[in-house]
Length: 111
Length: 120
Image (cartoon, rainbow over all chains, first blue to last red):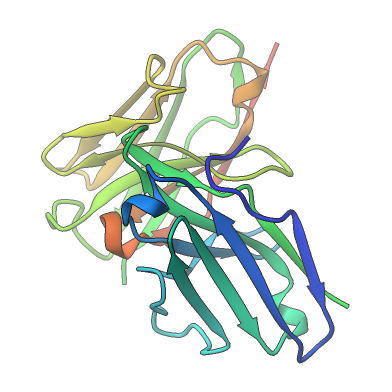
């Protein structure tokens, strides 16, 4: 059971917009700690996709955007492409655990 | 450009200690701005943060693993190490090291990972 809750899967047609939720609690996202998102393509290491809730590292397409509100955060992929099929993880800091926590991951499938 | 490379035995016997090294290239592990984290991922499952170290030597660990984990840094050789004692089959996973920018920046550089299998 992950501290941060994500839907196991989301899917959409090419070009469609999809959103992945990440629900936490008052000891992590709700405490104001920033949320980060990672993309993990099959057989590869995770890659930082969004940091500080809504910032994209250099090279990440602007089709990816993030937001945070209350005890939750969201990752939006605007305009699905086949090469966006991957697992996506949210991450935040948890003050009760004094460390990083991850969501369980969401598999994005392009139909 | 900073790169990370994990190394260590791919097979460890149950009850023994798993020892991995992460070598940092393209930058100094002592830059002072970063933490260095270890994360693991059992096959087909999600990511689990193991712990991290600052260049001062200050560490923090996942409470669920704290009694078995030691992370250390060797600044002269630009590498960090992970020791996980009394391993069981549940410790079988891909192990990653990552550069950790702390609260705001997340983990911006990851190694390719190394798979460790615990055998009985």
